[in-house]
Image (cartoon, rainbow, N blue to C red; front, side, top):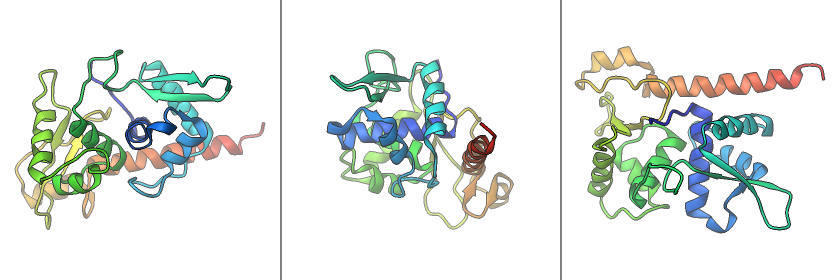
Length: 218
């Protein structure tokens, strides 16, 4: 079954994967640690300012999808969270270390080129050459159960095409011929694809909704 994540769910899952790989001694994450990870200013696009209630609602939604596990540490009442998104006994979604690093970066930063992914994902897996990134992306496209990433049309002024993950609820823009005229039809602003613009607007809407909830009389 295809996993579908909205933009906030993708951010939460991406943060849990990242911290599991980069700081395993601090994983699983408490709600407070997860909020900080979601709002981190480095390795995030867009940079957010989510509150605990917004992240908790996202965790509740992921729990209903059976994509996270809530647990408490021995002798502690603090609830901690770990993902069940991939590479667990609970699901069939399995990635190599390189594939996991790439998927994590796409969840955290949106569409990126192979060169960008090599630079950014190298903190989670070793990539000696860009060709290794391209091979991992090809493997993610050629999955028997269906592609998990898609190559976007090359944008004017870019030497490389960007790749996006396919875990979003919205269908991806069609990867058609690399024609500048067609690019104008799917781009909201220069250098921004329709998918990334929709994701950004979804996040902004969720933040505004959370702020409105805070303003309501108790």
